Length: 261
Image (cartoon, rainbow, N blue to C red; front, side, top):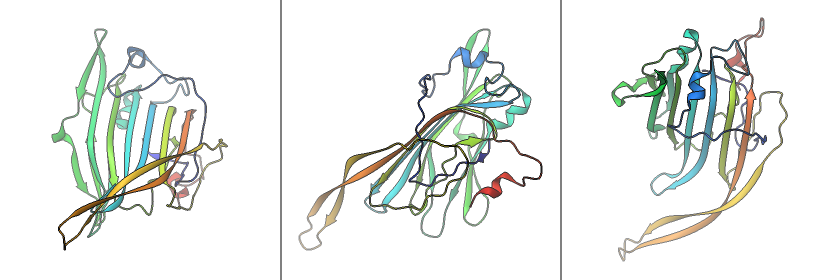
């Protein structure tokens, strides 16, 4: 499952009203396991049943603001060609001073055996951190007990001290998407330049909430520790959409990835 079209760095987001089930990690249904083909595309080898991304800024006493993102994917595998969707990698950037990291990575494969749901969890020893180049590493893993008919899901937390640029917000992939919910919580004193790729038209949905954080000030003279509380507004941008068709390569169109800035 590769990331294609729809890049939204901050500012822009979508709202789309959907009547759909609620998804929770570990709550895969028999109906999802019995499904033989994707209703959106009968020829699809796999389908993203659900994707969620929740992005917020948190204040760290030592590093200042950091970006914290919660990701969750659930994918259905229909045939042998779709099994490659169970081979995952998560890139992280690092330099001499700071590094992005992935924590709380969990993944499970679900299969039906004699009418019962069987769960196979990914073991920590099967998660590898591989250096790609001098500034990129990748967390790599393959889903266990993967076969046609499997449903797989994984979730993780991505933490980045590099708040000058957010991760791309991707809506469309090379396999169909049944539903996705994306939330971006941005402190109102941060400003980013938006870049958008794609032709669909969505309504923007924005709401603001107040948040507060504490900063510890230490006085070397009195050895006293003073906590100051700061209040700021957080702008919440939401994308709630679904029934997104697969993005397919076309003759003479070049590499899809080249459309990214």
